[in-house]
Length: 116
Image (cartoon, rainbow, N blue to C red; front, side, top):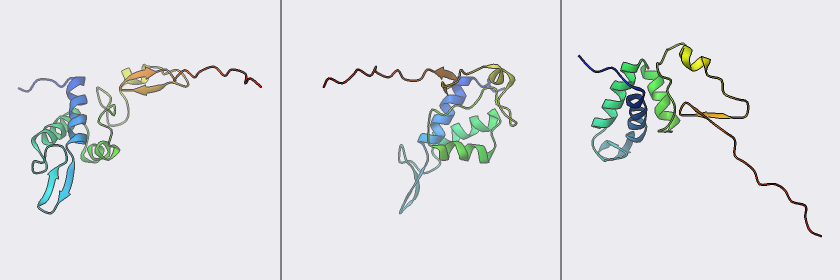
């Protein structure tokens, strides 16, 4: 019986499918990261984890096209949107959510009057 997925498994699977994508060569597609024949072992593992997590082929391809290995996939994932736990979390206006945690906007330096 396989072990249940954790948020860490999903995060690493997203990294695996994004970093280990196909690159066309005269000999055929190779893994962009390690040069193995595509799909390499890590790409296959990441895809299996994301499928087990509930993403379909179209959604996995969208994650790969996005190109960000740190893109956040909600845990637990539901096909109709974020889980109730995710929806209950409130992000203050002006803040961006990154990897499930709100990030405060950057602080700008004060503007000093110009000397004439």
